[in-house]
Amino acid sequence: MDELFLSSDKRVSGVVAAHRRARARTVKFQSTGTLGRSIFVYPAVWLAQLLERRALQRLFLAHPTDPEDARRKLAYLMAVMVADRSSPGATQVIDAIETLRPHSATLTEFLRAGTIKADE
Image 1: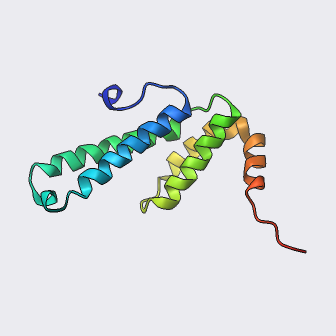
Image 2: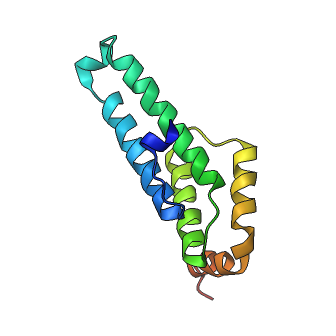
């Protein structure tokens, strides 16, 4: 069933795009205003939340194919974890770290480039 709603692209960019679509769908259904009280909207909200969680899980498990893919995954996961009120579980974070480990040197440089250096 996942294949009907999520991208079949094996690159991280496809998985990120699938999560963005799922998140946008969830937000759309949650902000329906007066329709939010309708018994017909609750199943749609529940399904959208389920698909969003599955897309996020798929993102945690996605293996980057190159350093650019690894940077995209790291940056997007950091943004999701900061923006979302519910934090992922420890096992999900460990899974993400394991998939990024082959690109650790590139990611270290990426993170260092973004740090603010204090004036001396």
